[in-house]
Picture 1 (tube, rainbow, N blue to C red):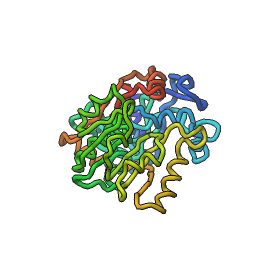
Picture 2 (picture 1 turned 90 degrees about the vertical axis):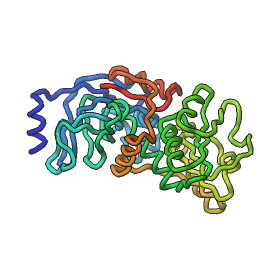
Picture 3 (picture 1 turned 60 degrees about the horizontal axis):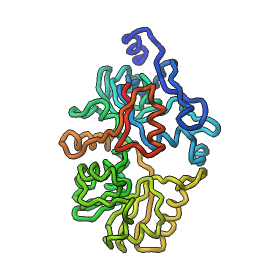
Picture 4 (picture 1 turned 90 degrees about the horizontal axis):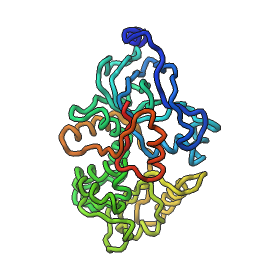
Length: 338
């Protein structure tokens, strides 16, 4: 009842503009339409979206690739979520009857459903107050990538002060946070990126940078306590050569592993091999944690980390955002301003 009353107080309009798709495919399947505003359950929040984050995960969900995704709950023949987007920031429009942390008018960021729209729904437990020193656009690119980087380094790799950490994909959405968080944890950080992104990675605080277009991660002879491989496709043998005998490799996602598995096979091989060697070779799927969003908020407000926005788009330009992701033109995280 509370949600209904709050919605009615904002006006009688029930329509909104949203990006939608009725089939899997590349950017051309996305269309801007006018649809019904979403309804919320008792534990959910209706957010008036001010900005939405765009990353490689959106591309995977839009295309339905690798095909394995379709069999694990995202929709076998068409996407279950007709409107893409999860990362968001905005203003609370209405709250469900059991929601206690937020009230209409609160500025929030977090993870919702159908963020490429004027309104989106999010669970109360997947939202946090927007950092005071961020714009909505900046806040919209924090939750998914920031939480992934934090959990990979703090929880899976257990990074300690003084350790040497190699981050492959350092200029991307997760990587740009990983460089900064590894520094916060006291590590000596080496970032791997292309030539055009060296300046960005250095500005994030990387102690060293490897330009993968000119050298391999093993060329220097350096070995690392932790390697974070984000969306990479390097062979396990090469990664292990750069890893200390008791070091930890954390694989976050993967590309170019085929239409069916998309790199998951490499992750499974790494975990199987880990049983027989001294190195810890692992992968993980991040948890959508409100506690970790609050920790990121504290880091941001303390000036320890900052979001990196590569490109900005309007809602109608969402297909362009997806094309830029696919063609590797994005730096940091892209954002859609709504």
